[in-house]
Length: 229
Image: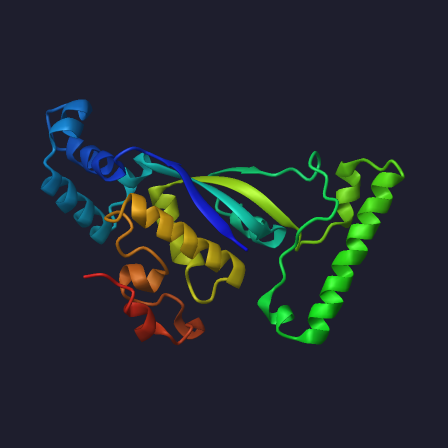
């Protein structure tokens, strides 16, 4: 089961974003602006920046997530988001005896498929155990492991990168596992910075239009219900 925890984030992220934007047009210094900007001004500036897509100042705040219960299939997709930092549990140093694994819902829903999948995972475990018992190093025995093998990863992104990540991975056309993780990350980010992530999510939710053309999921009206006023 996927578990996402927001471990750390920039203190007062929305105030930092507002201060950064205001600095461009103010003779005051950053520290002074950070302390003296009225709360309503912070709210107004952040809403304006997000609505207009002026996202450069969002790069000044970052969010660090601890993620567990995901597969190597997911993390191979995740690291394609290059403006981010990653620290993943190593299969070279961490033994994978009796490894946990992720079963796709489509396989779990078909008894015969589920049985074959679980049998395959048992065979892989047995092979891994046999290799290591023969003195094969873990870094080589891991070559037998499945993409379904469960892993853990720490991810840090700035707010601009997160918005782009949500655009792509909250989309109904995203792969099911990374989409589920993205929605959990979004829920955590919204708790920390509700204005920054007010209409974050799939591109249609953020912009009010679907960019997928003929590849649309066909659920535009349903997705629009997620938009906040």
